[in-house]
Amino acid sequence: MELQMLKKISKRQFIRSGLVVIGATAAGLQNVDGFAKTLINMGTTNISLPGNLGKFSKESPYAVTTPKGVKCQICPNNCILKEGLDSICRTHVVKDGKLYTIAYGNPCSVHIDPVEKKPLFHYLPASSSFSIATAGCNFACLNCQNWEISQQSPKDTMNVELFPQKVVEEALKNRCSSIAYTYSEPIAFYEYMFDTARLAKAHGIANLLISNGYINEKPLRDLSKYLNAANINLKSFNEETYAKLNGGSLQPILNTLKILKEEGVWLEITNLIVPGWTDDLNMIREMCEWLVINGFADNPLHFSRFQPLYKLTSLPCTPLDILEKARNIALKTGIHYVYIGNVPGTTAENTYCPKCKKIVIERRGFAIMSKNMNHDACKFCNTKIAGVWS
Image 1 (cartoon, one colour):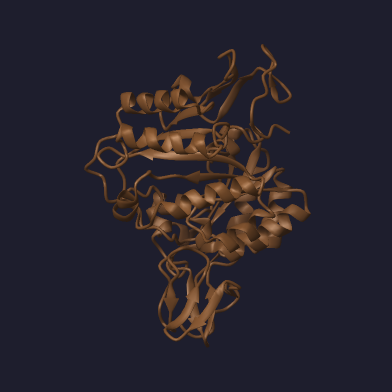
Image 2 (cartoon, helix red, strand yellow):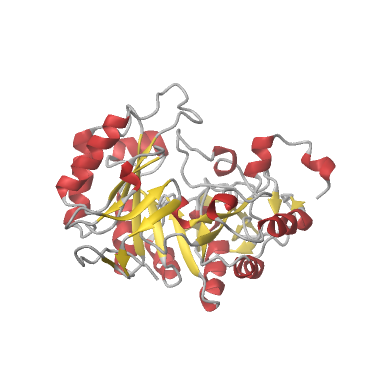
């Protein structure tokens, strides 16, 4: 990429473009400068449609022809498309009666992150994750924090050429334990994620799904064969809220949680508390009770603080006392590991032993300050701490 081209975009656009490695210094990573230069040397690319879809497209296996058009079967949106129409997620099109992804090998964001940033607190702490995203999302959240890429098509973002084999090579080169499919919505670039995950597993690299969980059962079970861990954003526990705030529905996400558990994928759950939308404590209690009843008491729950972004800039940040009340409700309901995110310095970033209540992992932001565990158990009382530790 020429420096002249870089000058034409804003700092925020440059960061979103994936041509720099965010958070690498804090994670203590090596060879970061070399990786950033590698991406810049790859250059950027754009997709031009219609016509020849080009090398950043691939036929999707999850499609069926109907009298109304070609139906995408990846997520519950179940888009029925004719030529010239984009899917809701903006990453799938129909050409010559077949469904294609146009989000294949062309990520707009590529970073090396600490795994704690996902957030995954009980999965290989202090390890590095090679993180990728293309443009697109199958939701339309009013509070989206990555709307510059999630609410765009790969046709409209600055992308780098990074096919599955190259993703794996770069992850290995940069000594990353995992590859995370994240930032926008991985379900929107499912085919790219699937092929990368399959290749990564063959090379001994773990795969992490950071997602809204809005996916149909068949593609999820197929993907789960290659997944090691996931963080699913359970955005609320109310169908009406899901429809109005996110443009989706609750039940498919609950199904996703159950399927991931059945498939043996380590799971953590995030709940963003948005003032006036998802801060009802009775709803939060109902959500926590459902999680415990359905066997998720040992799966960490992250309550995340809302920041005024995108279409909800008029709202305040989530009050700290609401986050603390939500955490107390979850703990009293029987969830063993409950965290508060986006609040610097809170002690609710730490992992506490559910039996003796002592700190087994002390955190400050994404950094591990101390660890009081003997392999997978509390060193003070020998209680097993749920998670994947090695």
